[in-house]
Image 1 (cartoon, protein in one colour):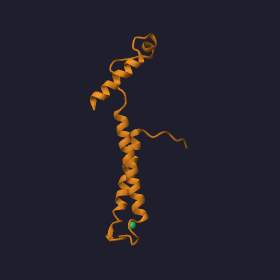
Image 2: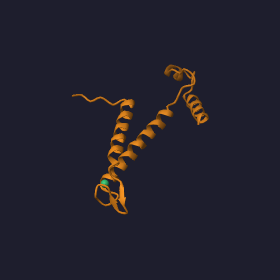
Image 3: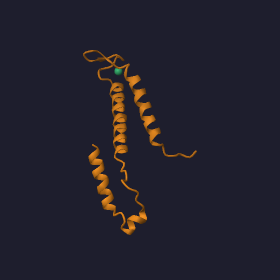
Image 4: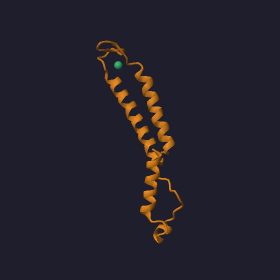
Length: 106
Ligand SMILES: [Zn+2]
């Protein structure tokens, strides 16, 4: 069976699934007395810690994916490789324009 790379939408959906599942499970681990988890173990129990770490991990990944998606350069004018090679659109100028546009956006 061949494996194909996941699309961004699939990765996002997977991360949200993991977060939702972990949130549902972590609900069963609450502090019930000064040092006791509702599952009967010492607070915070191993499950509480690993589920919380999993939620943090996937939320962080989602946040980084959103930041990277927002930083994808957008060309302000059509540029072809041939045009760049001919010097019609010097690459550095294009990159500088994009940097200025991205800077202006935030
Ligand atoms: Zn617990």
